[in-house]
Length: 249
Ligand SMILES: C[S@@+](CC[C@H](N)C(=O)[O-])C[C@H]1O[C@@H](n2cnc3c(N)ncnc32)[C@H](O)[C@@H]1O
Image (cartoon, rainbow, N blue to C red):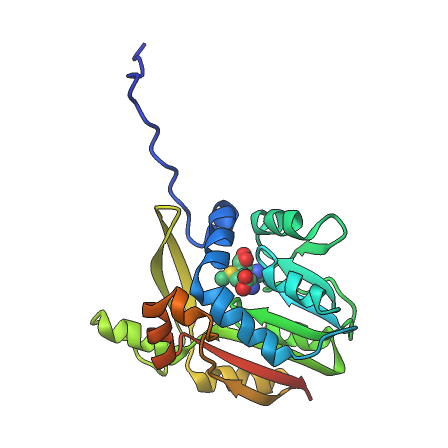
């Protein structure tokens, strides 16, 4: 029988594509520590939401729950859903046993009655979906007639720029799948996204019964300037995310 050398180190497990279950702890830590979420995306989507006190809010693709926590602190009654049980475990630790967190895949019908929410926040989740039609129809269904869907997604011009810099011949006007490798906890994590042009996004929103009230390209908050000078300069010159406020029509 072969023996295992004493200095043998088990190879680190490889992540599967979009393996948020395995990435949960390390993703949550990076989400908190870096500029992209804490100093750019989250302040921007919270500013667009404004005063949410007393509003019933669905945090769709809530991940480890940082947005849920901020909304709850501002007086909203929040429900969080995510496809990853691992991410929701981290969210549960953050938010406590009383938090309404449910494993739900946004490609499936939502387990909520019509008009259950005043707002839906879809923060950095829609670009994981190939088909937006059925998901947006469900998000519209669970909103009140005066409800709002507030969205952040990868900016399609930014994604187009990444491909051009890498010498890839992608067509801006196409909706297509693309992959990149994130480094998470020192390991390569393959991630897969769906990019679509701006007009495909706005067409999908209006087809699902939303009126576009705001399209926003915010910059990182000023506090990030000293903490992340290089990234601050880059994000102040070229957007990474695109934001929408959509009203149920
Ligand atoms: C980039 S993270 C953003 C998490 C959170 N919104 C935030 O900003 O911290 C994307 C999240 O979307 C979730 N997700 C991806 N595809 C999904 C789907 N089909 N249904 C529900 N959640 C999904 C992932 O599990 C992950 O938690």
